[in-house]
Length: 260
Image (cartoon, rainbow, N blue to C red; front, top):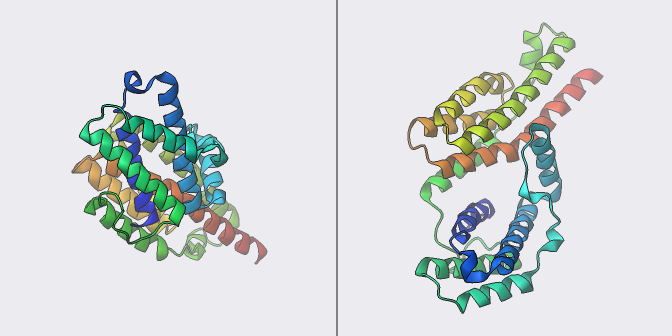
């Protein structure tokens, strides 16, 4: 199982944890379980994507007013307390689905401890083929992405002032897309989300950001067809994770032009 697939599955577990009622656990125990789970998830994300990238994403979240649950310190994650809570849960009257969630969480903790083995018989249920296909496609797009602003500068007739204005507008459009798409996802407004994607696509084409363009195209297609909120949220997260790399490439290109 790939590292990003691992986090995708973790999101499903997070949804499943809500099936435990406060009456079964008690308010304090349920709160501790929720906090421990969030720290566990943040620890995984930090290992997969790196602390620096997570901080870059936090800056983007702040700019568009999105509250992230990952602002806490990963050191707050107490494995022993988490295991104790899961053991207590197993001693209660659980449904088959709830018991499966507990077992999967144990496997997830072992996977984190052992360093993300890609092939193991202990892996949780296989992530859907749709997610696998989407991730493979996106990885190919991100890997082949090579931003070259020379054609854009030529369109600006060699005037750096015009290019800098285009880049500034591009960044503003991206931030607008991030905020608008987040709102439409939360409201499950698929028509508005599709229009938001159509609006940002010309800017992505202009800057030759093929990876981000592929993400928005897939979001647009899903809005017209399946309207699967989990797939859409997954794609949106991929956009957020890739944009800092794109911005870094664009800034590097601009610095090269300024020194020429």
